[in-house]
Length: 353
Ligand code: CP3
Image (cartoon, rainbow, N blue to C red; front, side, top):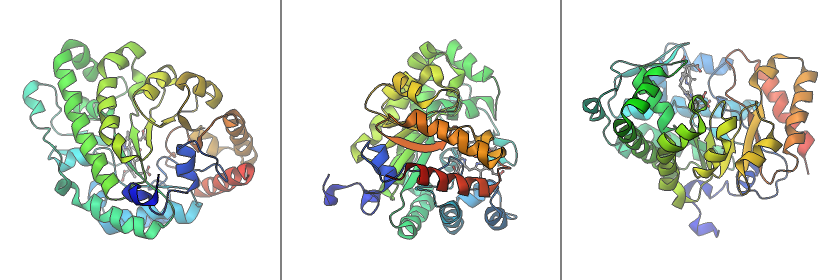
């Protein structure tokens, strides 16, 4: 790709280790970033967030910029992830919801009927003007460090909307999926359109890569995933394919779904800690990079144990064409920030070529 037809966010980041690994090109070292690296336990994060509700902080470009940069400065990770939440686009189109500390997203009136669907209107760039503004500031500050944009995948968003909040068993969601397949398909299609529009805003504003978080999709059997969920995720990936920025697809407990998640169209498949990366590569098939997959709970152990578990991940990834080191799920809230800083340095040192 020549410099002048590169996507907006690639002008200065194209040759970064992170984007090279996503493209399965040789890298100077294995790139590292952490899901949920922004926010969480950093003292500098808690300080700037003092007295400001989560959703409000997502709508303030100055705060978003600062919080997104904090883990890059502190840990020297190879990519920044934009500070926001998967429910921000839903809030932006007028869904009455809040993020409750320690709980997660809570929706005032769950979406369960055909009439409810009408509340999910199209998302336009003006609805999320603060994202465009913050990303403009961020890409300037980040220089050669790529910025990852993200969105919640249709299934995971549907789960919050149908349940009305976090759910262990997703029973209302599955009741709708099995009980009214047409309404379910229409709901997921609507969410795919909103999600695609939201990712486009981010790529146009300078995101160098995008990650689709289907965090709770591991609750599904492969046949149900293929029939009732995959078409909507395919639609999202197709909608942003022409930009040429790497698309990452992640879920938790997806060992049985890895092949289908690769088929859905991503360039990089995120793997949790339950499946070693060499086995994950067999399940995903050729032509995809992998991201992962240290168990985030390992960071609570001794530095020696962290190093030994990290070596296991790197050894399993040794034969892969593209590997982005990450945790198998997000950073846990009480993780010692120094353990993350040490982990980045260790992966860089071990994999320096
Ligand atoms: O990765 C990052 O650091 C960027 C920011 C980010 C947040 N949420 C900030 C946040 C990202 C990428 C997310 C994604 C997200 N949000 C997911 C997918 C990732 C995953 O973990 O599987 C999901 C399922 C959500 C929904 C959500 N938002 C939950 C379950 C919670 C509460 C529990 C928790 O993890 O803290 C939130 C709140 C939230 N999102 C906070 C932050 C910093 C905490 C806000 C607060 O309590 O003040």
